[in-house]
Image (cartoon, rainbow, N blue to C red; front, side):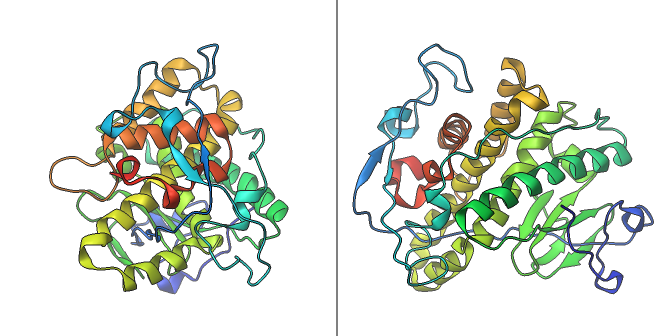
Length: 320
């Protein structure tokens, strides 16, 4: 499934990215955040790794506050209200939570040369193609409309409806205002310290795509409403819940596509290293701790089910 083409006049570039290579700027931002909701019941999440020791988890890992993955609680989806397209509770009782596992995803990706912008862009498009196909099928099962995000892969500074790009600390982002998936083709390599492991960039793309999943399912709209109602002290927590859910949704895709992309134990560890790199450090508290970033990513990889990614109903220690 290809994204809708966008007019050149707006600074947009479409595949294969010729306009960006000519120096046309395009934009970036991060459209995130949702509201925490009350729960009517709780379902314990089981440990993030299978009993036989295989899978994505790291033995001995515990979440912030000493909680293990099997002590994570999330809200149990309620019966369909049928009142609106997304129900009356887009975060806690979303139709996307009722379909089950994403299912096996068959992907192909070209060899990656992180020092070659053309190779990086080709790789990003191939992963986005796979994300499009996987999530479009899932939304169809959920009875929800779906359109692929507009891909904006920039090679030069530009401006999006969400603001200018690149900005400090941001090499990729999702802009809900135009459903844009923004990726700095060279900037993501610089932000990843020249990482030559393709799975790290697969995680980055699947995380940002997770925000598009949130937008298409009505969650981002609910987030913006929650932010408008919330006090200043609650804004960072809302953002963390949103970001950690995107980690989990990205993990769902990684778990479903890992076999076809050749993700073994070393590749899985590289992904977790990248999750840690992109978690909160220093004074920022908007993306979640390294422990919780890893926990939610692992949980998505293990469960393969968006219903397991309901960070909006999780206890506060799990979204710090």
